[in-house]
Image (cartoon, rainbow, N blue to C red; front, side):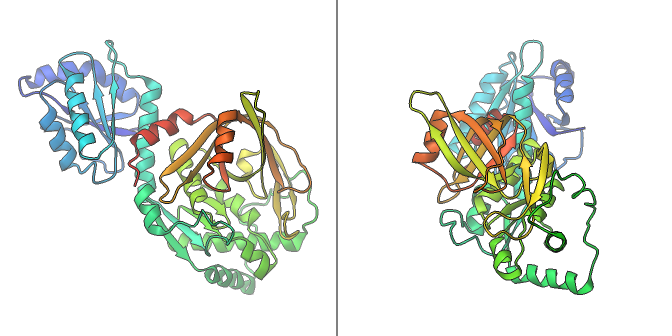
Length: 424
Protein backbone atom coordinates (compact mmCIF):
# COMPACT_ATOMS: atom_id res chain seq x y z
CA UNK A 1 0.00 0.00 0.00
CA UNK A 2 1.35 3.43 -0.95
CA UNK A 3 1.65 6.07 1.78
CA UNK A 4 3.48 8.75 -0.21
CA UNK A 5 4.61 9.53 -3.74
CA UNK A 6 7.98 10.87 -4.75
CA UNK A 7 9.17 12.75 -7.77
CA UNK A 8 12.83 12.53 -8.78
CA UNK A 9 14.82 15.58 -9.90
CA UNK A 10 18.14 14.93 -11.65
CA UNK A 11 20.65 16.92 -13.68
CA UNK A 12 20.29 17.00 -17.46
CA UNK A 13 23.93 15.90 -17.60
CA UNK A 14 22.79 12.40 -16.62
CA UNK A 15 21.06 10.30 -19.26
CA UNK A 16 17.97 8.22 -18.45
CA UNK A 17 19.93 5.01 -17.95
CA UNK A 18 22.31 6.68 -15.48
CA UNK A 19 19.39 8.13 -13.54
CA UNK A 20 17.58 4.81 -13.38
CA UNK A 21 20.71 2.97 -12.27
CA UNK A 22 21.37 5.47 -9.49
CA UNK A 23 17.71 5.51 -8.42
CA UNK A 24 17.68 1.71 -8.27
CA UNK A 25 19.98 1.84 -5.25
CA UNK A 26 17.25 3.55 -3.23
CA UNK A 27 14.02 2.47 -4.90
CA UNK A 28 13.58 -0.77 -2.96
CA UNK A 29 13.91 1.00 0.41
CA UNK A 30 11.43 3.68 -0.63
CA UNK A 31 8.92 1.12 -1.89
CA UNK A 32 9.24 -0.85 1.35
CA UNK A 33 8.50 2.36 3.27
CA UNK A 34 5.31 2.90 1.24
CA UNK A 35 6.72 5.17 -1.46
CA UNK A 36 5.47 5.16 -5.03
CA UNK A 37 7.49 6.66 -7.88
CA UNK A 38 5.47 9.46 -9.47
CA UNK A 39 7.97 10.88 -11.96
CA UNK A 40 11.62 10.59 -12.94
CA UNK A 41 12.79 13.93 -14.29
CA UNK A 42 10.37 14.88 -17.04
CA UNK A 43 9.23 11.27 -17.47
CA UNK A 44 5.77 10.70 -16.04
CA UNK A 45 5.38 7.32 -14.34
CA UNK A 46 2.00 7.43 -12.56
CA UNK A 47 -1.01 9.67 -12.50
CA UNK A 48 -0.62 12.04 -9.56
CA UNK A 49 -2.68 10.86 -6.58
CA UNK A 50 -3.82 13.97 -4.70
CA UNK A 51 -4.63 11.87 -1.65
CA UNK A 52 -0.94 11.07 -1.10
CA UNK A 53 1.74 13.57 -0.04
CA UNK A 54 4.43 14.26 -2.62
CA UNK A 55 8.11 14.12 -1.64
CA UNK A 56 11.05 15.20 -3.83
CA UNK A 57 14.05 12.92 -4.27
CA UNK A 58 17.08 15.06 -5.10
CA UNK A 59 19.00 12.49 -7.10
CA UNK A 60 21.84 14.79 -8.21
CA UNK A 61 23.16 18.29 -7.88
CA UNK A 62 22.24 21.03 -10.32
CA UNK A 63 18.53 20.40 -9.69
CA UNK A 64 17.62 23.40 -7.55
CA UNK A 65 15.62 25.24 -10.22
CA UNK A 66 13.83 22.07 -11.31
CA UNK A 67 12.83 21.24 -7.72
CA UNK A 68 11.49 24.76 -7.14
CA UNK A 69 9.47 24.56 -10.39
CA UNK A 70 8.01 21.25 -9.22
CA UNK A 71 7.07 22.76 -5.85
CA UNK A 72 5.34 25.63 -7.65
CA UNK A 73 3.62 23.47 -10.29
CA UNK A 74 2.30 21.02 -7.70
CA UNK A 75 1.30 23.93 -5.41
CA UNK A 76 2.81 22.09 -2.45
CA UNK A 77 3.26 25.23 -0.37
CA UNK A 78 -0.13 26.61 -1.44
CA UNK A 79 -1.73 23.39 -0.22
CA UNK A 80 -0.10 23.95 3.16
CA UNK A 81 2.03 20.81 2.79
CA UNK A 82 5.63 20.53 4.01
CA UNK A 83 8.51 20.21 1.61
CA UNK A 84 10.13 16.81 2.17
CA UNK A 85 13.43 16.40 0.36
CA UNK A 86 15.10 12.99 0.09
CA UNK A 87 18.87 13.08 -0.33
CA UNK A 88 21.81 10.66 -0.43
CA UNK A 89 25.60 10.81 0.07
CA UNK A 90 26.80 11.11 -3.55
CA UNK A 91 26.34 13.08 -6.80
CA UNK A 92 25.98 16.39 -4.88
CA UNK A 93 22.51 15.39 -3.73
CA UNK A 94 22.76 16.87 -0.23
CA UNK A 95 24.25 20.24 -1.28
CA UNK A 96 21.38 20.70 -3.74
CA UNK A 97 18.82 19.75 -1.11
CA UNK A 98 20.28 22.28 1.33
CA UNK A 99 20.01 25.06 -1.26
CA UNK A 100 16.43 24.10 -2.13
CA UNK A 101 15.28 24.04 1.48
CA UNK A 102 17.01 27.35 2.20
CA UNK A 103 14.96 28.98 -0.58
CA UNK A 104 11.76 27.32 0.63
CA UNK A 105 12.38 28.71 4.12
CA UNK A 106 13.07 32.20 2.72
CA UNK A 107 9.69 32.02 1.00
CA UNK A 108 7.94 31.21 4.29
CA UNK A 109 7.62 27.46 3.83
CA UNK A 110 8.64 24.61 6.10
CA UNK A 111 10.54 21.50 5.15
CA UNK A 112 12.96 18.77 6.10
CA UNK A 113 15.76 16.78 4.50
CA UNK A 114 15.90 13.02 5.05
CA UNK A 115 19.19 11.38 4.09
CA UNK A 116 19.80 7.83 2.93
CA UNK A 117 22.92 6.00 4.08
CA UNK A 118 25.58 4.63 1.76
CA UNK A 119 23.63 1.37 1.44
CA UNK A 120 20.59 3.25 0.15
CA UNK A 121 18.41 2.97 3.28
CA UNK A 122 16.59 5.82 5.00
CA UNK A 123 16.04 6.05 8.76
CA UNK A 124 12.87 3.96 9.09
CA UNK A 125 11.42 5.76 12.12
CA UNK A 126 12.19 9.24 10.79
CA UNK A 127 10.60 8.40 7.43
CA UNK A 128 7.53 6.88 9.11
CA UNK A 129 7.11 10.02 11.22
CA UNK A 130 7.44 12.39 8.27
CA UNK A 131 4.97 10.34 6.21
CA UNK A 132 2.52 10.40 9.13
CA UNK A 133 2.97 14.15 9.51
CA UNK A 134 2.32 14.82 5.83
CA UNK A 135 -0.75 12.57 5.83
CA UNK A 136 -2.03 14.22 9.01
CA UNK A 137 -1.68 17.69 7.52
CA UNK A 138 -3.69 16.63 4.48
CA UNK A 139 -6.34 14.99 6.66
CA UNK A 140 -6.69 18.04 8.91
CA UNK A 141 -7.25 20.30 5.90
CA UNK A 142 -9.93 17.95 4.58
CA UNK A 143 -11.96 17.54 7.77
CA UNK A 144 -15.15 19.14 9.06
CA UNK A 145 -15.70 19.60 12.78
CA UNK A 146 -19.15 20.31 14.15
CA UNK A 147 -19.70 22.55 17.19
CA UNK A 148 -23.10 21.55 18.54
CA UNK A 149 -24.08 24.55 20.61
CA UNK A 150 -21.60 27.20 21.68
CA UNK A 151 -18.56 26.48 23.88
CA UNK A 152 -19.56 26.24 27.54
CA UNK A 153 -19.57 29.57 29.35
CA UNK A 154 -16.67 28.64 31.65
CA UNK A 155 -14.30 27.87 28.78
CA UNK A 156 -13.11 31.45 28.48
CA UNK A 157 -9.83 30.49 26.77
CA UNK A 158 -11.24 27.75 24.53
CA UNK A 159 -13.81 29.40 22.25
CA UNK A 160 -11.90 30.04 19.03
CA UNK A 161 -13.75 30.86 15.83
CA UNK A 162 -13.86 29.13 12.47
CA UNK A 163 -11.33 31.45 10.84
CA UNK A 164 -8.69 30.85 13.53
CA UNK A 165 -9.20 27.08 13.36
CA UNK A 166 -8.95 26.96 9.58
CA UNK A 167 -5.92 29.24 9.36
CA UNK A 168 -3.93 27.46 12.05
CA UNK A 169 -4.87 23.80 11.57
CA UNK A 170 -6.92 23.48 8.37
CA UNK A 171 -10.32 22.06 9.41
CA UNK A 172 -13.64 23.62 8.53
CA UNK A 173 -15.51 24.46 11.72
CA UNK A 174 -19.29 24.18 11.42
CA UNK A 175 -21.62 25.79 13.96
CA UNK A 176 -24.68 23.61 14.55
CA UNK A 177 -27.44 25.13 16.70
CA UNK A 178 -28.14 23.16 19.84
CA UNK A 179 -31.83 23.27 18.91
CA UNK A 180 -31.06 21.12 15.88
CA UNK A 181 -29.87 18.36 18.20
CA UNK A 182 -32.93 18.73 20.45
CA UNK A 183 -35.25 18.57 17.43
CA UNK A 184 -33.54 15.39 16.26
CA UNK A 185 -33.90 13.81 19.71
CA UNK A 186 -37.60 14.65 19.78
CA UNK A 187 -38.13 13.11 16.33
CA UNK A 188 -36.48 9.89 17.50
CA UNK A 189 -38.66 9.77 20.60
CA UNK A 190 -41.81 10.56 18.68
CA UNK A 191 -41.07 7.79 16.17
CA UNK A 192 -40.05 5.40 18.97
CA UNK A 193 -37.03 4.33 16.93
CA UNK A 194 -34.88 1.38 17.98
CA UNK A 195 -31.95 2.69 20.00
CA UNK A 196 -29.55 -0.18 20.66
CA UNK A 197 -27.50 1.07 17.66
CA UNK A 198 -25.35 -2.01 17.50
CA UNK A 199 -24.34 -1.76 21.15
CA UNK A 200 -26.20 -4.74 22.68
CA UNK A 201 -23.09 -5.71 24.66
CA UNK A 202 -22.82 -2.37 26.44
CA UNK A 203 -24.58 -3.51 29.60
CA UNK A 204 -23.29 -7.08 29.49
CA UNK A 205 -19.65 -6.00 29.49
CA UNK A 206 -20.06 -3.43 32.23
CA UNK A 207 -18.65 -4.40 35.63
CA UNK A 208 -21.57 -2.67 37.34
CA UNK A 209 -24.58 -0.47 36.59
CA UNK A 210 -25.71 1.83 39.38
CA UNK A 211 -27.38 5.21 39.98
CA UNK A 212 -28.49 5.34 36.34
CA UNK A 213 -31.50 3.28 35.20
CA UNK A 214 -33.02 1.91 32.00
CA UNK A 215 -34.71 5.22 31.20
CA UNK A 216 -31.31 6.94 31.40
CA UNK A 217 -29.84 4.31 29.10
CA UNK A 218 -32.56 4.86 26.54
CA UNK A 219 -32.05 8.63 26.64
CA UNK A 220 -28.31 8.15 26.10
CA UNK A 221 -28.94 5.97 23.07
CA UNK A 222 -31.43 8.51 21.68
CA UNK A 223 -28.77 11.19 22.01
CA UNK A 224 -26.30 8.92 20.23
CA UNK A 225 -28.71 8.32 17.37
CA UNK A 226 -29.41 12.06 17.11
CA UNK A 227 -25.69 12.92 17.04
CA UNK A 228 -25.14 10.28 14.35
CA UNK A 229 -27.82 11.97 12.29
CA UNK A 230 -26.00 15.30 12.61
CA UNK A 231 -22.71 13.63 11.64
CA UNK A 232 -24.30 12.21 8.48
CA UNK A 233 -26.23 15.37 7.62
CA UNK A 234 -23.23 17.68 7.92
CA UNK A 235 -20.54 15.18 6.78
CA UNK A 236 -18.59 15.58 10.02
CA UNK A 237 -15.31 13.92 10.95
CA UNK A 238 -15.50 15.12 14.55
CA UNK A 239 -17.76 17.12 16.84
CA UNK A 240 -17.81 18.86 20.19
CA UNK A 241 -21.01 19.17 22.20
CA UNK A 242 -22.25 21.81 24.64
CA UNK A 243 -23.23 18.87 26.77
CA UNK A 244 -24.37 20.60 29.96
CA UNK A 245 -27.36 22.04 28.08
CA UNK A 246 -28.62 18.45 27.87
CA UNK A 247 -28.54 18.38 31.66
CA UNK A 248 -30.58 21.59 31.86
CA UNK A 249 -32.99 21.01 28.99
CA UNK A 250 -33.33 17.23 28.77
CA UNK A 251 -32.18 15.98 32.20
CA UNK A 252 -29.74 13.71 30.41
CA UNK A 253 -26.07 13.75 29.39
CA UNK A 254 -24.00 13.01 26.32
CA UNK A 255 -21.28 11.01 28.10
CA UNK A 256 -22.21 7.60 26.69
CA UNK A 257 -22.96 8.94 23.21
CA UNK A 258 -19.61 10.73 22.94
CA UNK A 259 -17.80 7.59 24.07
CA UNK A 260 -19.53 5.49 21.42
CA UNK A 261 -18.86 8.01 18.65
CA UNK A 262 -15.14 8.08 19.47
CA UNK A 263 -14.99 4.30 19.32
CA UNK A 264 -16.58 4.43 15.87
CA UNK A 265 -13.91 6.85 14.61
CA UNK A 266 -15.84 10.11 15.04
CA UNK A 267 -13.82 12.12 17.54
CA UNK A 268 -16.21 13.58 20.07
CA UNK A 269 -15.42 16.22 22.68
CA UNK A 270 -17.25 17.76 25.60
CA UNK A 271 -18.38 21.25 26.55
CA UNK A 272 -17.87 22.77 23.11
CA UNK A 273 -14.11 22.96 23.78
CA UNK A 274 -12.56 23.91 20.42
CA UNK A 275 -8.84 23.28 21.16
CA UNK A 276 -9.64 19.89 22.69
CA UNK A 277 -11.62 18.59 19.73
CA UNK A 278 -8.82 19.83 17.48
CA UNK A 279 -6.36 17.90 19.63
CA UNK A 280 -8.48 14.76 19.61
CA UNK A 281 -8.82 14.73 15.85
CA UNK A 282 -5.23 15.78 15.24
CA UNK A 283 -3.85 12.95 17.37
CA UNK A 284 -6.00 10.41 15.50
CA UNK A 285 -4.80 11.63 12.08
CA UNK A 286 -1.19 11.67 13.31
CA UNK A 287 -1.04 8.36 15.21
CA UNK A 288 -4.14 6.36 14.31
CA UNK A 289 -5.00 6.23 18.01
CA UNK A 290 -8.20 7.27 19.78
CA UNK A 291 -7.62 10.02 22.32
CA UNK A 292 -9.28 10.77 25.65
CA UNK A 293 -10.20 14.29 26.80
CA UNK A 294 -9.85 14.77 30.56
CA UNK A 295 -9.63 17.37 33.32
CA UNK A 296 -6.44 17.72 35.38
CA UNK A 297 -7.78 17.50 38.94
CA UNK A 298 -4.58 17.38 41.00
CA UNK A 299 -0.98 18.21 40.01
CA UNK A 300 1.69 17.37 42.57
CA UNK A 301 5.23 18.63 41.94
CA UNK A 302 7.95 18.03 44.52
CA UNK A 303 10.95 20.33 44.13
CA UNK A 304 13.50 17.61 44.76
CA UNK A 305 11.94 15.16 42.31
CA UNK A 306 12.46 14.87 38.56
CA UNK A 307 8.90 13.61 38.10
CA UNK A 308 5.45 14.82 39.07
CA UNK A 309 2.04 13.18 39.46
CA UNK A 310 -1.25 14.33 38.02
CA UNK A 311 -4.75 12.96 38.44
CA UNK A 312 -6.98 13.43 35.42
CA UNK A 313 -10.66 12.57 35.23
CA UNK A 314 -13.75 12.83 33.04
CA UNK A 315 -17.20 11.25 32.86
CA UNK A 316 -16.73 9.99 29.34
CA UNK A 317 -13.96 7.95 27.75
CA UNK A 318 -13.83 5.73 24.68
CA UNK A 319 -14.38 2.13 25.79
CA UNK A 320 -11.74 0.98 23.33
CA UNK A 321 -8.94 2.55 25.39
CA UNK A 322 -10.13 1.04 28.69
CA UNK A 323 -9.36 -2.32 30.26
CA UNK A 324 -12.77 -2.34 31.93
CA UNK A 325 -15.66 -0.06 32.80
CA UNK A 326 -18.80 0.37 34.82
CA UNK A 327 -21.85 2.51 34.15
CA UNK A 328 -22.81 5.26 36.59
CA UNK A 329 -24.54 8.61 36.56
CA UNK A 330 -22.82 11.82 35.43
CA UNK A 331 -20.81 13.14 38.39
CA UNK A 332 -21.87 16.80 38.64
CA UNK A 333 -25.55 16.34 37.90
CA UNK A 334 -26.30 12.78 39.03
CA UNK A 335 -28.17 12.35 35.74
CA UNK A 336 -27.73 10.23 32.64
CA UNK A 337 -25.14 7.50 32.09
CA UNK A 338 -21.40 8.01 32.43
CA UNK A 339 -18.42 5.74 31.81
CA UNK A 340 -16.54 4.75 34.98
CA UNK A 341 -13.55 3.28 33.21
CA UNK A 342 -10.25 1.67 34.13
CA UNK A 343 -7.34 3.17 32.21
CA UNK A 344 -4.61 0.53 31.80
CA UNK A 345 -1.11 1.31 33.07
CA UNK A 346 1.56 2.15 30.52
CA UNK A 347 3.02 4.91 28.40
CA UNK A 348 0.82 7.74 27.18
CA UNK A 349 1.27 11.13 25.56
CA UNK A 350 -0.43 14.28 26.83
CA UNK A 351 -1.14 17.30 24.66
CA UNK A 352 -3.03 20.57 24.58
CA UNK A 353 -3.49 23.07 21.73
CA UNK A 354 -3.93 26.71 22.71
CA UNK A 355 -2.91 30.33 22.34
CA UNK A 356 -4.89 33.27 20.99
CA UNK A 357 -4.56 32.00 17.42
CA UNK A 358 -4.16 28.29 18.28
CA UNK A 359 -0.48 28.66 17.52
CA UNK A 360 0.83 26.85 20.59
CA UNK A 361 1.06 23.17 21.54
CA UNK A 362 2.01 21.76 24.94
CA UNK A 363 2.86 18.06 24.99
CA UNK A 364 4.62 15.57 27.20
CA UNK A 365 5.35 11.90 27.59
CA UNK A 366 3.75 10.37 30.68
CA UNK A 367 2.92 7.05 32.30
CA UNK A 368 -0.38 5.82 33.70
CA UNK A 369 0.46 4.36 37.11
CA UNK A 370 -3.06 3.86 38.53
CA UNK A 371 -6.72 4.22 37.66
CA UNK A 372 -8.61 4.90 40.90
CA UNK A 373 -12.34 5.26 41.44
CA UNK A 374 -12.49 8.06 43.94
CA UNK A 375 -15.75 9.72 44.89
CA UNK A 376 -15.99 13.48 44.40
CA UNK A 377 -14.46 13.35 40.92
CA UNK A 378 -15.55 12.56 37.37
CA UNK A 379 -16.07 8.83 36.85
CA UNK A 380 -13.07 7.75 34.73
CA UNK A 381 -9.79 8.60 36.47
CA UNK A 382 -6.07 8.07 35.85
CA UNK A 383 -2.97 8.91 37.87
CA UNK A 384 -0.16 9.98 35.54
CA UNK A 385 3.56 10.33 36.18
CA UNK A 386 5.25 12.97 33.99
CA UNK A 387 8.42 15.06 33.99
CA UNK A 388 8.38 17.71 36.71
CA UNK A 389 9.28 20.53 34.32
CA UNK A 390 6.31 19.67 32.11
CA UNK A 391 3.97 19.71 35.11
CA UNK A 392 5.35 23.10 36.16
CA UNK A 393 4.62 24.43 32.67
CA UNK A 394 0.97 23.49 33.13
CA UNK A 395 0.81 25.44 36.37
CA UNK A 396 2.77 28.50 35.22
CA UNK A 397 1.71 28.82 31.56
CA UNK A 398 -1.42 26.75 30.91
CA UNK A 399 -3.17 26.67 27.55
CA UNK A 400 -6.56 25.78 29.02
CA UNK A 401 -8.50 23.28 31.05
CA UNK A 402 -8.70 19.91 29.31
CA UNK A 403 -5.84 17.70 28.17
CA UNK A 404 -5.85 15.01 25.49
CA UNK A 405 -4.42 11.65 26.54
CA UNK A 406 -3.38 9.05 23.94
CA UNK A 407 -1.81 5.61 24.39
CA UNK A 408 1.90 5.33 23.55
CA UNK A 409 4.83 7.73 23.41
CA UNK A 410 4.27 9.91 20.35
CA UNK A 411 6.46 12.84 21.38
CA UNK A 412 8.94 12.34 18.52
CA UNK A 413 6.17 12.34 15.92
CA UNK A 414 4.54 15.41 17.47
CA UNK A 415 7.92 17.18 17.41
CA UNK A 416 8.26 16.30 13.72
CA UNK A 417 4.82 17.77 13.02
CA UNK A 418 5.59 20.99 14.85
CA UNK A 419 8.88 21.32 12.98
CA UNK A 420 6.98 21.21 9.68
CA UNK A 421 3.87 23.11 10.78
CA UNK A 422 3.42 26.63 9.48
CA UNK A 423 1.95 28.57 12.39
CA UNK A 424 -0.47 31.40 11.73
